[in-house]
Length: 236
Length: 387
Ligand SMILES: Nc1ncnc2c1ncn2[C@@H]1O[C@H](COP(=O)(O)OP(=O)(O)OP(=O)(O)O)[C@@H](O)[C@H]1O
Ligand SMILES: [Mg+2]
Image 1 (spheres, rainbow over the protein chains, first blue to last red):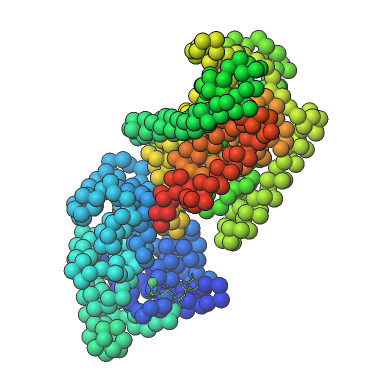
Image 2: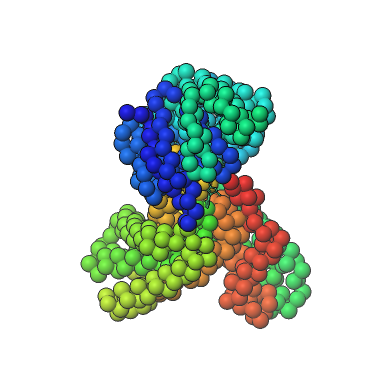
């Protein structure tokens, strides 16, 4: 049984048929990359998993349990963390308060405190900014905050929507290093990226999404070498 | 509400008290200053002569002597407006829409509080009550008023606003206006089926009507009514509690998170609908408490009692910067103060041309002036940061 599995998911925005039978699986301990052009349906796929959008047909299961009919706050309780597209920082909450919101479902004060310290060890920059309002952070700092916040609830799987978007190249490298490290520490990750080269370099496996359909899947290495992928996404 | 009571943050309790002190002093000082300048300018005027003839004092002395009383009245009514304004501003903060039915939520609080006191009076309980006992009965009336108003606010949101949440806010606004009229009729229906009277008077009990002398200037006694002290104290306690709830507790942070970004908040495991209901519950109960306090201060209520305080509190919320809790406090204080000053001096200074009944006009003129120059309200810049 896969940790996360989508089977033949069809999702709509009104009449727009955005996902046309998407199936994919993420095994425990993996980094899986989901790549595709703008408008391919990557964010829509993550929305269908997280409960923000309910698929019209098909199923989404987490550890074998169907979650596609659940409200997003309930899905989160099942062990799903999300670093949303556009980061979704609470602008008027401080960095610490943003992180506390990430741990909203935890009741154990000690656990929350430990996770907070972990987040600050992982991102020392956030510790320096702990009492600053989220909205006043730089883009890179906001991305760190969104990532750290996604981890605050000890999710079984972390979904990340374009963590490298809008970041300077050196920060992009740093974010991918951190994703690798998180994975090495045992976090399973489903990674959506425009930066296909980087994503496939660190991913165990990848899926290519095109206008709402999975057109290709293979290991990260093989996809990087695949002609069609090289033409379409790696600019080669 | 799960374990949100961590270690109590003293700063979060002292901060709003400090703010209130500053707002009261500031609004009072500005109004008093303007009034004294006017008094100096009006020396030798017709108004001055009339006062000399009828009261034997000049306009400056007259103004100076009455100033403390006017300030006390301004603070009292200012707190009532602030408590109502918080309901508008909290709902605006989380849903970006004006809950026009909030004035009727206030009226429901007033009616339920007053009716429970009338019932207690009917049982003879109020007449026999000791001083302590009468405070307890008033406390009970406050709790009943808060529960009824809070419950009604939650119900209104569930029935009339939630189904419209994804529609344009204009649609929800029209629904709110409809609810407002409907609730007025609910009160009238309830009263005609029970007491048969639309005008209800709060029973006289305890020592609420007594005056406590604060100090004396010459022959002028400056005093404060016990009920004004009660209104002020009750409002201060509620405002501090609200500030603590929103600023320092887990649910308070969750409410703020929801008001900034509902989708992301939901992804963090926050039940967005529950937080919105909680906001209506808290805002509604504050409005209900304000209704009972208003009835205590002005004694008589009717089914339309919510309209004027409601529209003024809405104005106060806009004046302070809608969506901003501190702004609602400031706006309420400023509006209450201006209204109290206008009510006290307008008649005397204009030799009766404009009586105290024009005080609302003055208050709203000043509101218009402020928002023309500061469209976001006095503390408005803080909401423009909203994500
Ligand atoms: N709220 C919406 N209403 C209507 N259509 C939408 C909505 N959100 C997305 N779509 C459409 O659904 C399709 C998939 O969008 P989606 O956001 O999933 O793309 P994406 O792969 O994440 O793209 P990007 O790389 O630009 O983020 C697009 O054609 C988009 O126009
Ligand atoms: Mg996207």
